[in-house]
Length: 309
Length: 297
Image 1 (cartoon, helix red, strand yellow):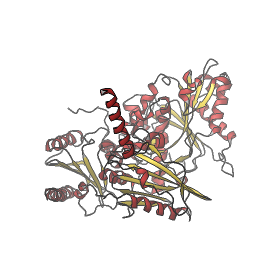
Image 2 (image 1 turned 180 degrees about the vertical axis):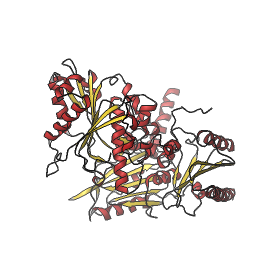
Image 3 (image 1 turned 135 degrees about the horizontal axis):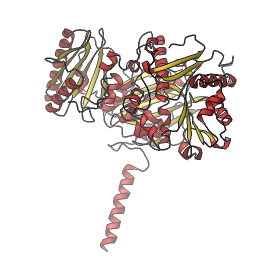
Image 4 (image 1 turned 120 degrees about the horizontal axis):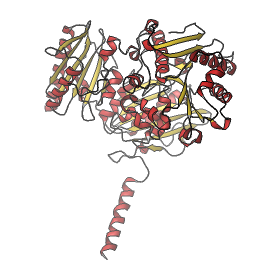
């Protein structure tokens, strides 16, 4: 009797779960079904079959090694839907669940060369392609062939998807740590891992700054001078201090009072500020390095103040 | 004492020029050694007439290029002598190709190699060409010898699609080599199915991709007719030469040094960490044959 009751109870729970969450769809951690963001049909464009889902490892089946870019962030899964319209080359929609808005922005910032304010929290538009981020999602809408028909259709589909994603798109607070003066447009990169850092600025083959999934980092490029500012937020002040020591030991042993000339006319500066590490790279003079460090410290003070409020 | 490996590379090494080719400094012909030191020989062969007026590859020219290259590489009088040194009638030979859609290993290259291997005495039934199916292909699983051939191109994760990377299909879990931008691809060459079997490497540089953009990392405008093959027994040295050509092309095209992203350090580590071959251009004897125009190196 007890056993029968248990089976009935489990069956009811399973039935409720199926009703609430459906089955077979690619859901995000909040229970949203990414399929619901896809237009059923729009301006004569029709979905070709059902959307295909790829999980964290399945992304390799879809895009081979390119999946690693998403896996450097909090990638949870993706769906792919193709749209067709008679006599016009097809359009492919990819929606990536990046776990949180910060990482959707991060993966967007990884490769963007220009940025427009819409759709979503920011978008890159080139040829017949739109890539944008909104909430925790990165969305790519790509026409196989650029034409007078496909280019506007890509925008229409992208806008329709953006409308369906109701979340806000806050950029990572750490982005505000970069001084704005001389910061190159669209050069800001947000990431967690040393592989990301090395993509944008090859510091060392090994992870000498102890970057990891729990560190947030932002990198900006400055001109003139071809300099970079890197700010890393660690879990603790001791982690930031350890990273500073590792950087000095492995990259700039001649550092004195936080500064060193590592090559002719190339200076670095490194400061641990509570749980933040500020690294200024390749400034033409020590004065430039000092100025960028001080400006960044001021920016971090502003972030801390905002967080306290 | 640093906890990191002594073969760690930093940006400062690049500044000092120790790993100059990795960050895109223009290739300097002076880097090529000319002293009596034992050098790794690599042949670069180019032919102006590789493509016909319709842009199709002329298979006769391809055969000629390979023949000339191996004669030079092994310092012999005719191609049959070179291939005779490499293969015997008892061999089972897999030609590891690459089928990537926009830029595959040209069939003309596969055929030219297969023909000369057969002429060296290997039975035709014991010669196979494959890429993604190598682990299911009995010629490869039973192989006694391999020939490695693929086009060089920029790659979104490893920096370049190289000869070293071409063996990634020999592991059923290719993604396990992705760490740190595929830094340790040379490990592939220690797999039992590969180790010690590679007799010849043919890096195809007919229309190399020197810059990748977009979803598929391919745009024809970033390819150019270089009409070359880089051939050698050392895959690391061939890759290093191919990479130098790509870097030189990027500098020419963009008007400034333009390092490939991500940095293709797997070529350097194949030398410094895995001792598979030579990545140092000063230790490579590069022999050039044929078309000189815009050779870049």
